[in-house]
Image (cartoon, rainbow, N blue to C red; front, side, top):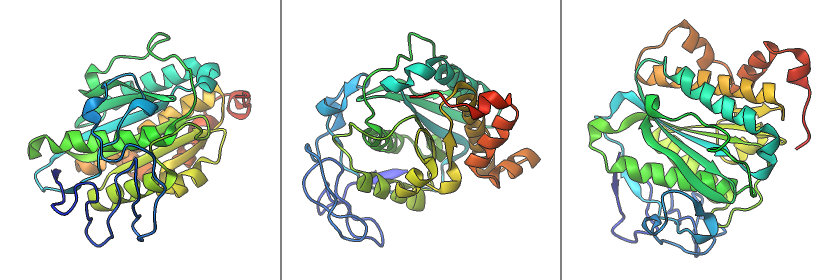
Length: 307
């Protein structure tokens, strides 16, 4: 994925067949239909001035979204996965479930044919990268010290920054080291309430561009809300979204379902599909969560814990 900045205006790069999209994070601008998007401060400033780990969103700058051209020499056996994990205060009730679910996800991906790099982002009203593009077999397990719920829920800022940083990092790589498949997976337990840099309209447009022009996949799991409706508003394929009950068994079931869905995506990309991956490819993520919940004791799958 080679990136090239527009010679007209690096902060308003044109995309083929669409009007310009403004940089997320400041000033005026337009969406794909030319209508203005609400913007936050700090347009065009570089993330190079932010720390890689531990940034609070209010102190960060957002880089411009720039045009890039997909090459045909990407590694078909390599998948880049960015796992965006909510660690806001309400997740305190489900801390152990989130830890176990993530560790379970990583372990299950180890058996999938091909290579995978994983970035783990934890967010509340701050943003922390706990693993950056590591071979999945090198990713450390979470524990009660490395995953500590706190703060509020800057979901849009976390998604936007992850997209932009992943995009920018991949474009620096030689073509044969660039992944043929990029997957952004989100788990959240609450409604957006703290983003300062990105709006929902901006995130929706960013996701549309990366899905349609670059073939990225986005998965969205959420508790305490209608995840399928929320995903649709963000231009995420509703088949790649799922509702999670706010209890430990359902959170664990959702991590298994997410792993199954990503397994099928990885195997499709590398031309190694088997009967299981074909079946999972044709199911929605929500269906897969319900399947995994059905394997749990009924009281665990049905009961919610108040957030």
